[in-house]
Amino acid sequence: MKNKIKIVIFDFDGTACNFNYGNFNSSWDAFSNVCGVNKELNQLLDNYYHHKEKEELMTKKGVKLFSGKSINLVNKLKPFPYSPGFVNFVNSRNGFFLGFLSSGLNVVIDEVAKELNLDFSISTELETKDGIITGNVKKIIPLWNKEKSFLELLKKYDFLPEQSCYVGDNENDISCFKTAGISVAYDPKTNDTKKAAKYVINNFKELNKILN
Image (tube, rainbow, N blue to C red):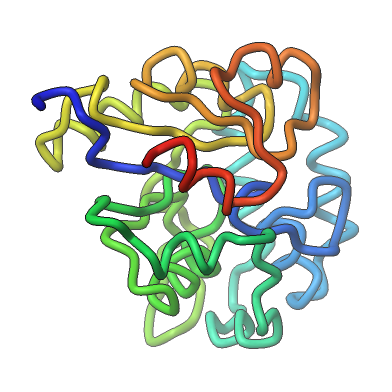
């Protein structure tokens, strides 16, 4: 069938992994902690997070905080705190094309994708030189306009929206819920997120039941 689900796209922060750092348990929170700049990041979030029009500025200022830090600091976050059932779901694969789409940090998310042997990992990309973060950003995955990156991802890998399943946990994922063939809220953080998804799960073993 042309429209059978073929690709499963996961949000990362709060969906695939839940780091025990900061206000959002995110890759940004976790990496800023091991880099020793968590207070500075929290200040940026307080100033910019709810101002969607300043998102790009917030991201660039956030990345500047990591200037001079080694990407190897990500190893301090291991073992990665995967959500219940996530690793088993990925290992089962069942013929799906699997990967991440996230506004989180690629220095963390790419490492997770590599560990799990995922097919793709698309996230906010930091510029590095000889393993050191320069403080510049190469690519930003928007937090509040994520569906644009979602559609670009599908086009890149030659899938139709109706062939996709998107799994997320928060309000910034709702635009992708509206675009995907199947939308799944994992442990949704708000009622609006829960209402926007076709399915709600609290363990990724439930995702296998939905897709199979």
